[in-house]
Length: 193
Image 1 (tube, rainbow, N blue to C red):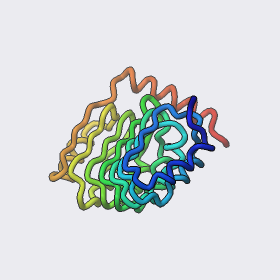
Image 2: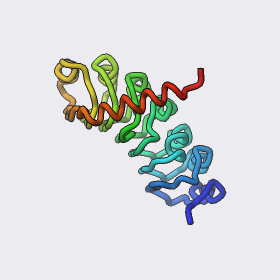
Image 3: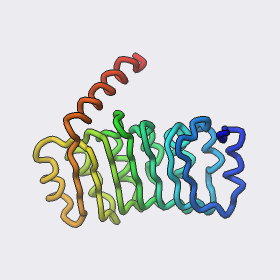
C-alpha cells in the first residue's frame, strides 16, 4: 500500500518531523505537499514524483528547511521557480536523471535563494551565462555539476568568475546526451502550442 493525497495531512500534524524522504510515492500529488506548508520543524526533504516536483511552493515555506533533494524525472525549471527568494535552504540537489532537467532559466531563482551553500545539478544542459548568476549567492561554497553539458570553455570562465567556489564538473556522456536530446524532442512535440 502507498500513501495517497488523503493521507498527506498527517505530515502537517507531525510537529516534531525533521526529515522526510519519499521515493516513488507515485500516488501523492503536488497538491498534497500543502500539508507541509509553513511546517515548523522540517529540516530535510527528499524525494521524487509529483509530490516534490509540483510541491516546491509549499516546501519553500517550511521555516527550518535546510536541505532539499529532488530526484528522477520530475525536476524541471518549473520545479525550481517557486523556490525563488527562499532564505533557509542551504543545500539543494536537482537530479532529473535522463530528462530535460533544469536549464539556464532556473538560475535566477537559484541565485535568489540567499542561504544556498551547496548546489548539485545533474543531467542538464547549462551554460556560463546561466551559471554565472549564482555568483550573487553570498554563502555559496560548492557547485557540483554531474553529467552536465557545458559549451567548450564555459567551465574555465565559471571558475574564473567564482574563484572562491569549488566547482566540480563531470561532462554529460555522448550516450546520455543522445537520450537527453530524444527526450527533449519528445517533450517539445507534446508541449501545448
